[in-house]
Image (cartoon, rainbow, N blue to C red; front, side, top):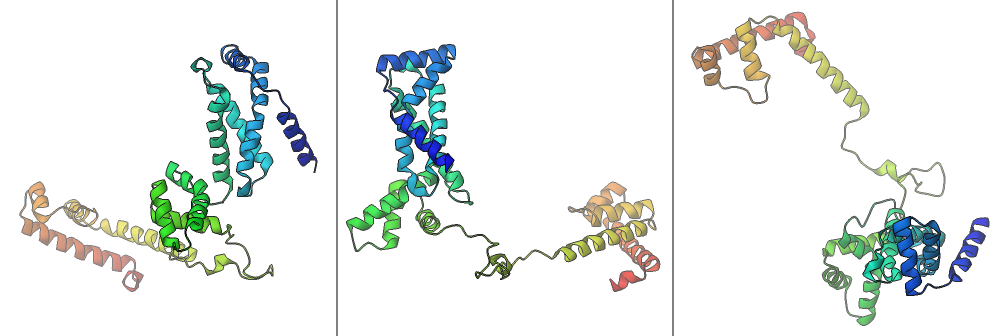
Length: 285
């Protein structure tokens, strides 16, 4: 209640602030830019707060507090004051309008939905123009289907028809929490309970990690039964993603590829014997 009263008082004060003549506006802008004159900045911004309030009213249908929109617009107004170049002889209100609108639109996109939208300029244009264009097209013809309306809007804004349909769906329905109960009772099932996940259960993940660690330990122990040449062949042929060919290993070791194959077979048999001897449960696993 107190907040609303303060907002109304601020709005009344802003709406009664005196307008600035061109020369006075230029002088204030130069004092702020060149000398950091805080009083000049305050006079400039207060004189243009009615512009912020007016623009906030245009965005009131997005369900966000008008006071928050005014605050965001004020941020845009300050940004405009920081970037304004008075020597270009453009009225400050003309320059500030873009910054005020951009600040409010960014606030709306960040807070209108828990799902981030309007991340590109085309998507932002779609978000803020979809309702207006759809209403205009629907009023102009009673025979246009939804698909035709989507196609015309997509052409006008330079986006995909599917993007128009998706945005229209989002604008037509509010966000729904996955933790909201399906019925009015607090102990009823939630929407989250009906989402199917293909990921393994936590106990399955833990069990798999334990099995992998155990088998790696078995293999490490068994590799100790091989001589250096056999160990190198197994490492190069079996334990690397891009295993060497028999011919490549033959060239490195100075033996024929048939001899490499024989040594590999013998090493694999040694590994099997060592694994079974040290861990009888290996065969069952």
